[in-house]
Each structure stands twice: as C-alpha cells, then as structure tokens.
Image (tube, rainbow, N blue to C red; front, side):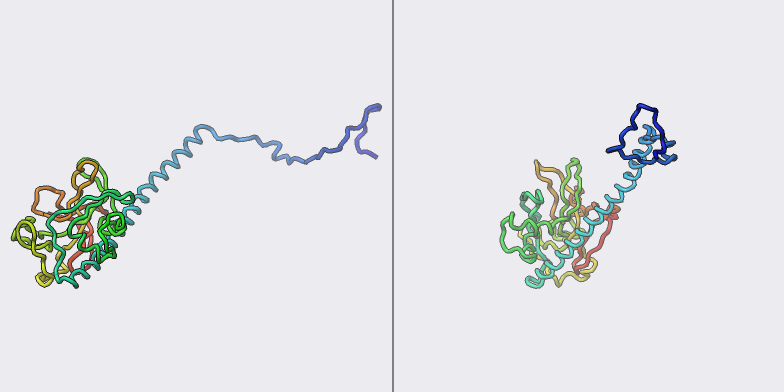
Length: 256
C-alpha cells in the first residue's frame, strides 16, 4: 500500500526517469559566496608584493651565473695562454688593433690581435668568423653592460698591455710587448718575476657606440684619461674578473 494517498480521480505522478536526491540541510541553508572587488584587489596586491620580492633574487641569480661563466671563460683563456707560452716562451703581443665582426648568434665581436693569437689554442684552426663564433664567445665576457650612450652590448676582455705605464711607451710593465710605436717585441715569460700578482687579462669598461657597433678596447691603459681603457665593474658589487699571469682568476674592484 502506498505511503501517500492521492485525491480521488487524480493519478499519482509518474516517477519514471526521475531520480530523487536527498539534500543535506547544511547545504540547503548555505548561501553562495563570490569574491568582492576589494578581495580581488587584495589578492592582486599580495601577488605583486611576492613578485617584487622574487624578481630581484632571480636577477641576482642570473648575474651570478654570468659572473661564473665569465670566470670559466678566463680559465679557458689561461689554458690557451699557457699553451701559447709553451710554444713561444712569450706572451701574445698587441698593437692595440682589432677588427669588428658580426655573427647572428652573438652580435658584434671585437677580434683583437692578441685574441687571434690565442684562437688556435682554443681549438679553431681557420680564420673565418662564422665558424669560430663559439670560440669568440669564450674570448669575451657574457655580461650585458651599458656604455655612456646608454647602448647595451656584451662585455669584452682586455689584455694588460702596459701595466702601470702609458700604452706604447718604453715604460711598459705589462705583457703586451715592449718598444714604442708599432711592431712591438713580445714580452718574454722569463721577465715576469711575480706572475701571481701580475694581471694578464680581465674585464674592461665599455666604450662608445660607433654606428651600430658596440666598441670596447682590447687592452688596458690605466694612465689614460678615457675610462674606456680602465678595468670593468659589470659584476656583483662593481667588480671585475681578472686572469693573472700564473693562471689563477680573481674578482676585484679598481681602487685608484
């Protein structure tokens, strides 16, 4: 017998195809809650604060990775220079000249004369630019730097050509060669008395933009009034990475 009685003459409604579901009283009494504009703004503000805290850390991490890559490049150059010394018993000389070249992968690169002397000891035998892009990457700092014009480009390495004397004078105390003017005589390995305290190669400050090219000197000249010939400061704390004549690499800051 049915639990419910229906008035006479009225048929009971059909339950075919109908599923009855019990709804808990707690849900029946609940109301739907949506985020208000203020709550959304608070969430956005929190995300912005977290991003502002995270982005500097990511930037510092990226800069630290570039500095590590720079030191690795200098270690590779140290090996190449030791191999060069083994063959010639002198350091690669420089006349302060170089050729600008362009590659799709690394942009403008400065082919300094002393760098070209080290290229064969890094594994490249020919003198074609395109085929040696990866090698040229080793011969330059990967850190992005800005010059006085506000233009940005890759950093470069410079040779300690003149030591503490003006470049291309008989007073040179660096490893870029001796004698005034062109065709300088290479600096013999035997005349360097304390190689552990003599800078050989390192970061240099960026120079000006020449057309579309980002020019940077390939040699140091600390006596010059042009800061483009001074050690760089593109790494953390305004430091530069330096390779010394004995093959070790240090990070330091110019103090004078």
